[in-house]
Every structure is written in C-alpha cells, then in structure tokens.
Length: 158
Image (cartoon, rainbow, N blue to C red):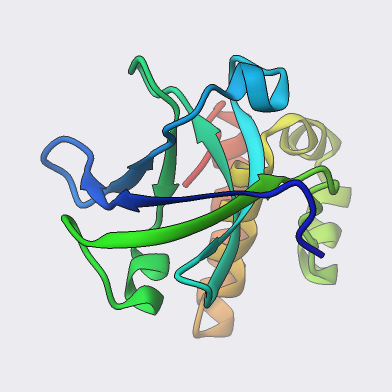
C-alpha cells in the first residue's frame, strides 16, 4: 500500500488569525514529484489518521499540507503540536458520488451540471457534503435548489 512514501515530523501551524492549520512540507515538490504547483497526496498522520489532500504553495515560498478541523480532532492535536507525517502522491482519480435525488435536479439543469463537472474535486465534494449533511428532508430539498442557483451564479464552493 505505501510505496515511495516520504516521512517527516512537522508542527501544526495556524494560518493567519483564522482557525485553519497546516504543516510545512520540508522538501522540494519539484525534486520529489516533478511538480512546482499543487500536488495531490495521501497522508497518514501519527500512524492513525489517513486522508487525501494536497500540497499547495498558498502564496508562500514553501508547500504546505492543510489540516482540517476534523483531522485535528481525530488526532487530538492543535496548533503548536508535533505530528509524524507519512505522505505519498495520490494518483487515484478523485470521484464524488452524486446521490440519485441530486442527479435528478442536475438532469433538469444541464448548464449547472456542466459547471459543476468543471469544478475542482474539493468544491464538488463540498456541495455534495452540504446536501447530504442536511438533517431534515425539507432542508435537503432547499439546499439542492440553492446549490443550482449558486452554481449558475458562478459560486465555486460552499
């Protein structure tokens, strides 16, 4: 499973003043992956939390690995804490499952579906999570309609 992986220890850093975290990637992505921009990766943190993400520059002179609040919660760690990182390039296609009821609304609006299909994996995933996380059926219905409006208005993500 883990072939050609990179291991290092990093500190969870806060991004600006917001509740966003990252770990500095201490190597050259160009040397390791032949890429200067974003690199899709899979990562195993502290030997227990695995997730798919990206190494990105984010207006800095180094690549960083973003950590969601959920990942930090699973690790039981926060800003300033050390974490062990095992990382490898993710070459699998990133597919977002679209529930049947959402496909139905997309079938009624081909333009919105075409725009959705052109979005990044992350933005498509955010839209589907937003809809499927709805607790009440009426909330889910309202979110599907709102999603179509947002996509047609050019909004990439939630």
